[in-house]
Image 1 (tube, helix red, strand yellow):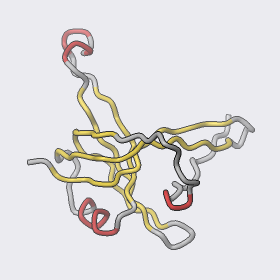
Image 2: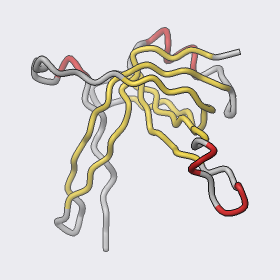
Image 3: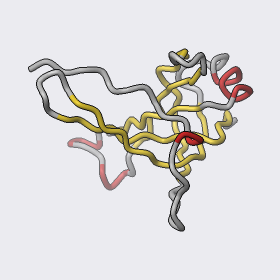
Length: 125
């Protein structure tokens, strides 16, 4: 089965005005997989993952630590520049909102991805 890549992230200013409900999340975990993407429009976005250990009561057999990997992206130029200087594995705190994107696959199916559109990212010491 052929699949296609997810579409480019959509800037929040390109989205319709939000309703009275909002989502805000706070993540704290290890930074991983930072990369910068230049959009066809010339805008830049940085994508990264936050690796979060699951609580002790949700560990695997033998107490093995399990993790969740959360995809994130950030548009802010100052924060993009800052996060690109950090190495994988540093502890970070991310504040942002959840967004879900949908796209069609080459085989005619559809896929989706939930990610955090970060408004603030800081290194935790």
